[in-house]
Image (cartoon, rainbow, N blue to C red):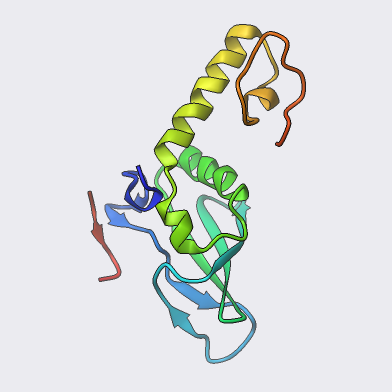
Length: 146
């Protein structure tokens, strides 16, 4: 399932993908834009807002920030971890990614790690788990904007 269509990509029944982008380069007045535009350059989680994921993007050589709000804190963290592997990709490419398959594969690795009594760091790495594993190789809603 594409990330943009994932059922948990919403907050209070409203789709949250793509976020509204607000200029973050200090220019005033702030510029606001929307859509699957730009290149993802960073994601930020903050302890004070564990249900929010802040995305930093570059659009036409200008920096913008967007915020994705969630009702599920764990899903927010999973998405943050997922996006760390896709920095430098376009927001459109990220929206196209198969997020459901990735989450299911990670869940299977964690279950296998528990079964084999391996550290969770190994389970979160890419690749199959075996008893000889050691260290990881590489670590329908409406839009509220319409």
